[in-house]
Image (cartoon, rainbow, N blue to C red; front, side, top):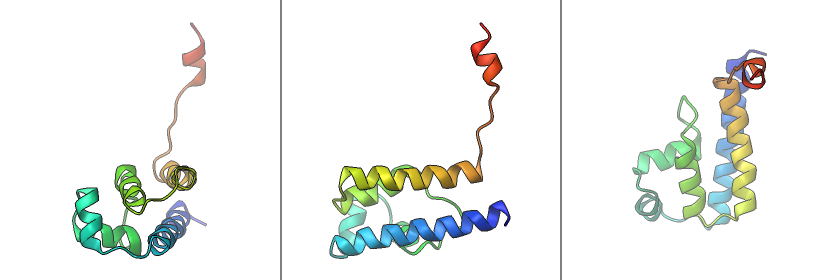
Length: 102
């Protein structure tokens, strides 16, 4: 399976998890969320429906979860999902020998 396919599946999983948290919060109106998050209604829609082509920035995901009053432990779990996707999309490579050679 290609990295792009894995990433699409992961993006769908993340969107599904965000929708679950939104639903558990009682599906607050987008207008309330946008006021709290400082983003547009279309941004909220893309987050919840997974219609964006790329991974949303973490601050937007965290703002949505905070606006839905999601517990900190759940936010951390979702952040680990987000990091896993980000690592597939844009791996970080560094030379550990250079770091420890001094």
